[in-house]
Amino acid sequence: MKKLQAKVVLWSDGSYLREYGVFGGSYLIQITDLDGNPLISPESGEAMPTEIINNVAGHDTYGSWNVTGEIHAVLLGLYTLVELEKICEIKELILRFDYEGIEHWIAGKEWGRKRPIAKLYYNTAAAFLLAHNTEFIWTKGHSGIEEHDRVDALAYEAAHAFVKQSNIKPDYMQVDASSIKKKDEIPQKPFEETIFKSDIELPFNYAGINGGKC
Image (cartoon, one colour):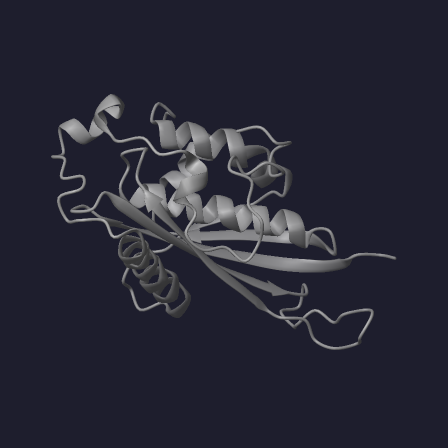
């Protein structure tokens, strides 16, 4: 059976609660046919959902604050797209974001990839994004764009929900801007413990996006 051809827009944003050392991230995936209409299931003949939304939160072991949240949101979104491609062929892929590293760390021309979070992002996502000729669109934060405002709010809520669920005290990780860059001073947590909520089974290293490599 021929796969449905889809246009996908992935919105992402991150949040950070400095007094707790906790990040939050959220993504919104919009899925339509190439004309912008809902995909029609070949089995039921009914319109398929046009949105998938999810979030992630945890301890910021990368020391990159809200950037940690946005990167994890993008990676979680891409893992979802790997699953989506079992039934759809993604012909157009657009990333909408407010942190420029989402684009520049893939291109590698403007920015280097020295930060641990940059290496995680590039090594995990580059092959998938480049294979799909991804279009990158920077979106100014808090500019009244509905989709971005939604992921912004959900990233913030995810971080707070993680704090409440984990019963973290406000002084758990009060680290100033100079020492936050020193990775050996940051309390380490296994990555699998950072996932707060997901509707899919998520391998701790996002295996499947780039051949299981991280």
